[in-house]
Amino acid sequence: MQLLVLVPHRDARGPLRAWSASLFSAGLPGAWSFPRVMPVAEISRPLTGPELKSRALMLRQAADLSGGKFASGPAAVAALSDNVSVYGPAMNIGLQDSFFAFEGNAVIRRVSPLVIGCALCRDASPPAANCPAPALSFRAAALANMTFRPLPSPDGFSFEWEIDKLHWLPKEIRN
Image (tube, rainbow, N blue to C red):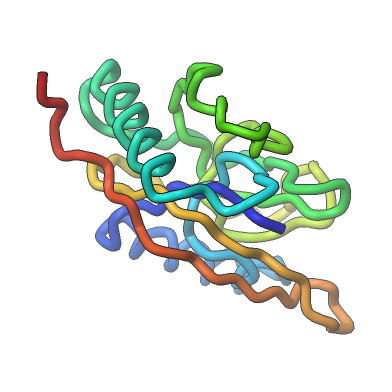
């Protein structure tokens, strides 16, 4: 599966790693099965550098409309496919339809709600783990293509992923 993902700056990923650990300790088997990134869309092909750069600018503009930072809310579940969902803090990011308009209809489907992945679930219902999501606020982030593949395993939660070159959001909008 090819995904377009938002990668928070490493400073924001520390609390997410700690939360993944607490989810695993609470018995959630998929807590280490997804990187701490936010899937935005399933795509049919890797996006080009210029496509990622233009969307990074669009994301910066969207963030600037809400004070310049991305902020998280309570934990939520977002389906990546019919049998794989990602669980993590929901992000309050409004993306216009134009954000998803790529040549050749590259977007297969949008991921909704937007969450930073800290665990995988088998279905779209939240896990029973009683661990509140960390509150996050960050400005620095990057867009990237990500390949995500299941590996044979008895528990069904073994995956491999590869995140391509990061395209950082501009620090500010220049007119």
